[in-house]
Amino acid sequence: MAARELPDADYARITDRGVQEARPQQPGAAPRLADPPPAPLTAAQKAEHLQSLSGAAFLFGAAGNLYGPGMDIPSFKSYLDAFLKDAGPPTDPVERMLLEQLALAHHSIGRLHVRAGTAEGLEAVTACHAAAARLQAEFRRSALALQAYREGAGKQATPEPRRPARGKGPGRGRNGAAAKGVKIHSDSEMGSKQNRVREHLHDCEPALS
Image (cartoon, rainbow, N blue to C red; front, side, top):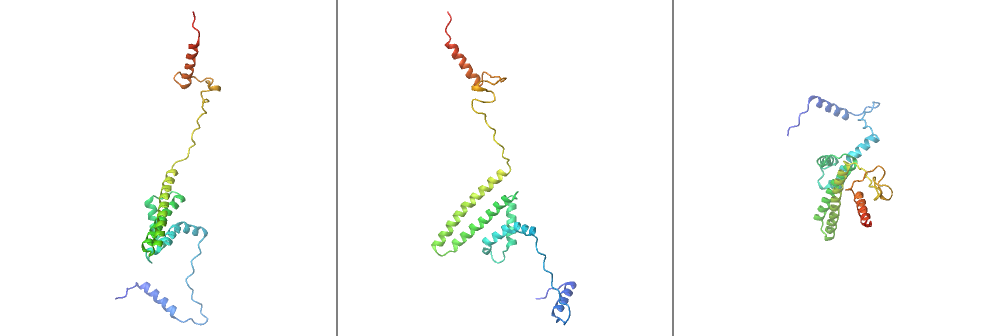
């Protein structure tokens, strides 16, 4: 198999570095300087990494060994980013956490089913299936909670208008009488009551001879 040819500049650089490393250190000569270590991350940069990679790290810890040695945290981050995009980009941190928890629960359920399928004892199989069933129920409740949260996020809570106390509405005064300056129509509830009262008094009047 032929060796891969390197560009002249790369070949010269690698050759010079090999010669420098193989040359014995002369007494009194300045030591060869190694590459400087990377600058430490600031607290803000660490927090950004935590926010960006926490969900992927949880998924990697929950199901990473099921997919072989080639899977790593960046792979799970790409998967999680695509999942969040397909599910609808979250608009706030709480919505993002709910989506990440759904993804985590999904893979944890799958892992429990795998363990149940590979377990040898009946007791272990039963325990894994029972745990998977409980986690599936929590998954459904979390999905409903996410739906309710998304529906409530776009609505602003408005106080319900207070209803006037019975018998003392805006058109009534003391003892249910009409307030001053308020006209009572004959077809209204108060007007019909007053009409019945007048009819009753009229029926009770003695007949004139």
